[in-house]
Length: 105
Image: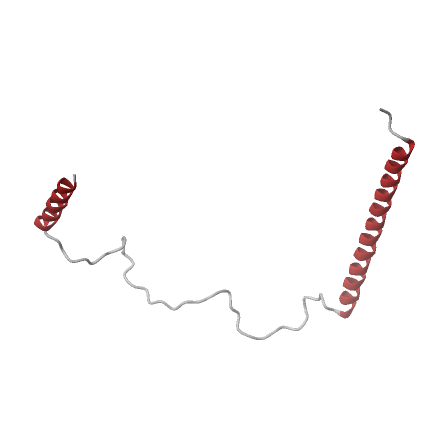
């Protein structure tokens, strides 16, 4: 079925509108860019970008500083202090668990 004459003209209108929007957008971007460049020029004339400008006197802080006393540097890994458990106690626990599982079955 061929497209109607109205449908064909609609596509032309849509394309014309799209092109007009693109041109308007480009024009706006250009004026925005020019405005920014003019501001930069004005600030340069005032001396805002001079490297010889005023120097702020104050402490220079590069990052957070934490004062921690340095302890033994030969530390190899974590040390966990736990009460010692005799082998016989662990064996007793294993035996009681085994008995409980046998009773449950």
